[in-house]
Image (cartoon, rainbow over all chains, first blue to last red; front, top):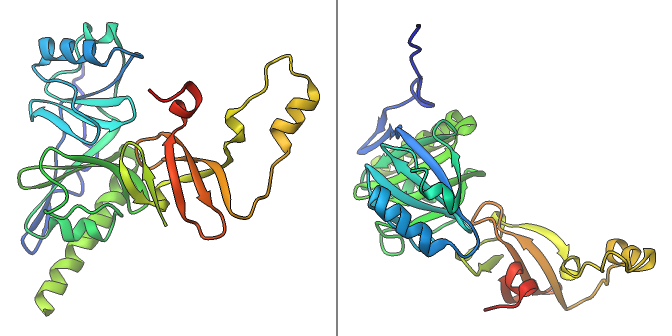
Length: 184
Length: 90
């Protein structure tokens, strides 16, 4: 049988850099949307703990590690992102949807990362108000996005169909911030 | 203009979509008759001052929100999740 080679959403565009900033693609092996049935949040958290060793985070937060993390993505909705899709045990108390190939995931890193996003999103993502482990569902250059704070910067998720546009806007802002730093 | 989302906190109004009067939450009973439905679908107050309205946090947490806003000054007084307003806040 022919073994097809999967292409990630940003394979043609990233990695890229400007000044001390880098933009790379993080292509997680699996993304599953989890929407707990009404009143089943606690049971869902227990099932996730058992199957993936991670619990449901509070609204606006991320829990877990790179190999299995849960990102809050909206009212009553979470994404399990990591090496494996959500276990079928979780599917008994929550609606699961495979989102693996639906999202483009980027990592923006560098000291000026918040200054870059400042130009694209209305949420205050500066170090004093947005901390590691926090996530915001907001606009990125008028595209809906999920932006989470990581150890070295931000993880940015947009729908796959917006991958090229989102990368363009972030890169443009990276070059703009870098240019401004050279003038000042 | 900033709107206080009960889940996300205060956010820029560009993340929200305005849907109209919160009267939409008070759907008449199925047997209420044509007059009641005509009123529900088409008849709206046009107040100056306080208005109770529905906003959708579409670029954010995707919640329907009931907001009390002064339509003259654009000042927001109270926001709550529409689901709480409808089912009764816990």
